[in-house]
Amino acid sequence: MAAVALVAGASALSAQTQLLKQAEKSGGKPADVVKILTPAFSDPETSKMSQTYMIPANAFFKEYDELFGFKQLGKTPEGGDKKMSDDLLEGYGYYMKALSVDTVVDAKGKVKAKNSGKIINALSGHANDFNNAALTYWELKEYNNAYRAWDAFLGFYEDPRFKGKIVAQADTVLGEIYFNQALAAWQADSLQNALGAFANAQSKGYGKKQLYDYAMSVASLAKDQDAVIKWASEGNAKYGAEDPNYLGNIINVYLQNKEFDKAFNYIDKAIAAEPGNAQYYVIKGILYENQDKKPEAKEMFFKAVTLDPQNQQANSLYGASLCQEAYKLSDEAPTSAAEYQAYFDSKIKPLFIEATKYLEKAYTIDPENSGEALRYLDNIYYNLHDEKMQEDVKRRQGL
Image 1 (tube, rainbow, N blue to C red):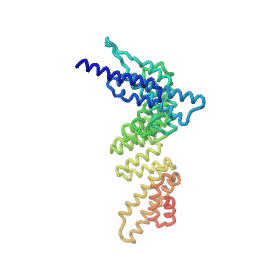
Image 2 (cartoon, rainbow, N blue to C red):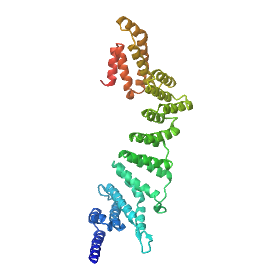
Image 3 (spheres, rainbow, N blue to C red):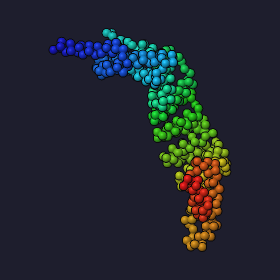
Image 4 (cartoon, helix red, strand yellow):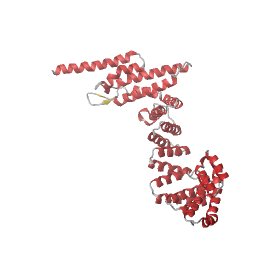
């Protein structure tokens, strides 16, 4: 019985080995080679052999080389660039699988790599082609494949097995490519991969402002508050003097978590370092508003608009705070008609008129982002019985 079992086992192995030989000699298209080999991928014996995966990898790379040759002659078939890129990615996957199982243990227990040298040479010879493939996928808006192609390309420079086999690239070049890979992952809605690629770009010395802007945006989309704080803090340290949005994002995280002490501590340090920055007072005013401290918020908005009369947000928020003060007074007004009118004319109306100056200015500075200012203006002109201006506001609102 033992002898029969051994024979049966040998027959099964022989059958799978025959599949390998059949696939290798078929000379067919890569898809046909994969079809032939499919049983071998799951067989307990052949699934552990590097040759099982080298055969389809070689087929994909062979087809790539043939298409590349046609391209050099100006005879690239329609869709050839896409097909070439697909061949590279498919072949890469099989080669990397082959590398992962390419170990042979001899009778003395010594581990040897049977085909690793051939695999590494094949991949090394096409290393730069993966960057070209990524660019092709980007143009086709196949962003996930663009990410994968760049992942393969960049992986060669991180894998010690390829050291000395490929032409070295400066970190500045690799940093740019990691940044592009991050954008591809972002477009593919793979947010954590995007954040990882942004971090890799930074590790290679890439430090342009757009790195912090985009990474901060992706972290926000991913609802990763730790990453928002990281990128916003680092961006603020480098570019905060020209762009207060980094600080705003940090404060926003603290607001979401109701960590007001941390938020105020952060903004007060920023104001102490740069007291003439109007946007910092806008942010502090918003903090006060979130604590329902209206007078303190109004004071901050006024400080901001005084420092920078062209700050759209400061004008809008200060005008809104004047309106809210008028609304509060209206709630406390006398109930009789005669007394109310006198009260309105002396206390409420002046606030509404003053508010229109700042709200209209906010609209003039940035009409596209003045929806809130227009809503307040609509209400003000209604209370002032100014039908002409109220109609003008509705026109600007597109109503």
